[in-house]
Image (cartoon, rainbow, N blue to C red; front, side, top):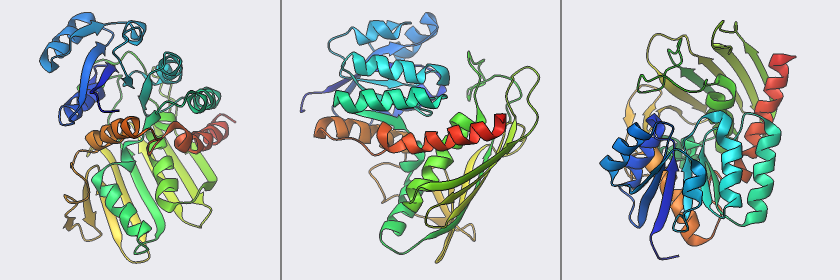
Length: 318
C-alpha cells in the first residue's frame, strides 16, 4: 500500500487530540473525518487540524469510501461495539484502551478481527513509550530480567472530569481501563503469561458508582511478580509510575521518560524515531496496514490481559 492512508478519528476529547498531534508527524497519513459528540466543538477542532468531514455519528464516517482506517478514542462502553462496526465496514481499526469492559465482547471482536484479515489494534501505549521500549530491549538482549514490578496509578478524580478538566459523558474505571495498562505490560515485558491474580478494592463512590481505590497482585509463569496500586483519591503527582526491579538493575518509567533506581535520567532518545508514545503507537498501526501484517498490540495479542481483568472482576464482585 503506497497511497496515503486516510483516517477517521472518533472522539475529539483529550486523548483524541493527542492522536491528532501525533499523526501530524507521520508522513503518508491524512485524517479526513472527525467524529465527536458535540458538533460545534468538533467543527472547531476539525478546522484547527484541517479535517474536511465532521459528524456526530460514526456510521457517517464508515460510509465514506475514502476512509481506510479508524482510530477510536470514544468512551469505554462503546469500544467493543464500535470496533466491530469498523471491521464489518471493512476498515482497519485502532481502538483506545480498553478493548472492552465485558470479556465476551472482547472475544467477539477478536473472532471477527481474525476472520476479517484487517489490522485490528488496541492502544496499549505502554508497549510503545520509549521508556518501556528501552527496558524491553534490555530484556530481549538478555541483560535484564524482571523480579518485580511495583506500579502506582494515581489520579485525583472525585468528579466526572477528563484530563482537560471538562465534564465526561461516561464514567472511567480503575480495573478495565487503568489496570489494563499494567496487566498487559507486565506479561509483555516478562514474556510470560499471568498465572495468578488477586484484587481488593475500597469503598464504592456514592454517586460515581465505582471503587476509587484498588490493589492488584500478579504473578507470571516465569516467577516474576507485580504489585499495582490504583486510586482516584490521590491529591498529588498524577499518572502511572512503574518501578522495574530486576536481577541487574532498577528502572523507573514515567510515561516516555526513564530513570535508574537512583533517579538518574537515562537517555532514551535513540530508542525510536520519536519520544512520543502515542505517535509511536500510531506509527505501528499505519506500518502494519502498509505491510499487511498484524501490529504489536493487536487485539489477539492483548486479549489475555482482558481475561485476567475478567477474573479479577469476578473476585471483586464475588
